[in-house]
Amino acid sequence: MSAAGGAGAEGAFAAVDLGASGGRVMIARAGPGVLELAEAHRFENEPVRVTDGLYWDILRLHHEVLAGLRRARGASPDLVSVGIDSWGVDYGLLDARGALVGNPHHYRDDRTNGVPPRVHERVAAAQLYARTGIQVMQINTIYQLAAAAGTGELAPAERLLQIPDLLGYWLTGTATSEITNASTTALLDVRTRTWADDLIAAAGLPRRLFGELLPPGDVVGGLTAAVREETGLDRSVVVTLVGSHDTASSVVGVPADDDRFAYVSCGTWGLVGVELERPVVTEASRAANFTNEGGVDGRIRFLRNVMGLWLLQESLRTWQRAGIVTDLEALVAAAADVPPGGPVIDPDDPSFLPPGDMPARIADACRRTGQPVPATQAQLVRCILDSLAAAFSRAIQDAARLSGFDVRVVHVVGGGARNALLCQLTADASGLPVLAGPVEATALGNVLVQARAHGRIAGDLATLRGLVRATHPVRRYQPRPAASTLAPA
Image 1 (cartoon, rainbow, N blue to C red):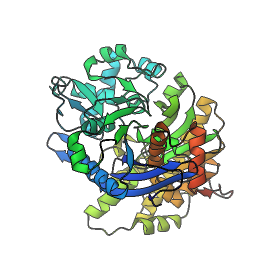
Image 2 (tube, one colour):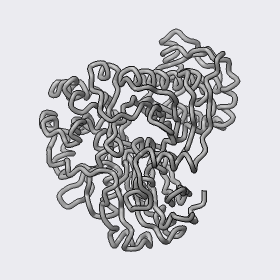
Image 3 (cartoon, helix red, strand yellow):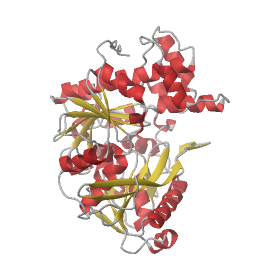
């Protein structure tokens, strides 16, 4: 949509939306009956592997953000605010001068292999879950910090900033910790929404790293003189906190017409769950490896992380590196013609976490489970999509069972909403209607929180979602009665 502006949408907002494989700066206008979004700048986000591990190229990301803001200013000189969201768990460390202590590690780096059991010797897994509500994943910040302890990496560090907070610091000179992303660290008390000081101490981590927590909607501050010079933005432009964990923003952008929905925020990861008023930290939810992450307006995102389209993305990269020409749209169309009943794997098997030859790993998983190995690219893509649909369905059913929540419809948002086969298979597997879209739910949720904070719109989450529903169409997929049920992996 054009960002040229509609009636009642005075002033524009920039949404910096960083995903694990790419980023974009979007321009939006929001007001009564108006929610318009346009792309100012899009860029790749490729990790860098060196001799000691896998890292994010954070300085390039900052450069691309500045380039995007410069283009946003050119398209919308009346920019009011900038909001930043990204993936969770990863962080940068600042020293006493405010300088970055090394590049941030990538969560797929193998330094956390075997670390969770070591941490649980100091902080029992049950105790950690009861306080933080966060599922055990070796990528969690607590395990990354434990891996860094004793290496000299933490010694000069005075402050930990997660990725959106780090980029916000470079834009404003003010260090903050936004609460929805902080919830992914497994160091935040899920009930009080404050740092769990006793757990930080028990894990052997320096308390000084963890600063003041602020909610979405708070204004961080104005842009530094250097950023204004680089981007051409006015002194009046500020950085506003949004749901800086990208899923927190994407759930705001779900166009639900009541609260009886499950969501699948599907990109590199598939975040599958429901939105609750209170956390669920029972032994049953811990055994099911469900997580309680912070949402906008104090909500809880009760969900399970599923490996998501990473399996497909990494398969495409493997084929491309081998010189095999691939066309994703054609492959998905061919996969739709593959008969049902093929192999179904567990997409959350740890072997799929690191980068590498994904088709070979999927073939190995099929052999281990006594299933036929996909013989063609189309069969492998169908295996991936069948497996994701089955995993999404299990997560939806588990979320409803563990929370007592009545799920009537599934909203698929993010890049996965473009994949018609995945959406249909998810409807078939879950037995529930699937509403797909908007693809840019994260950017929309980011903008909605900014616009509300600056008085352009008003209302609760239901009101914000109503605006999305009124301005952005969705596609409906009904479960097919004749569709075979996908077996659990």
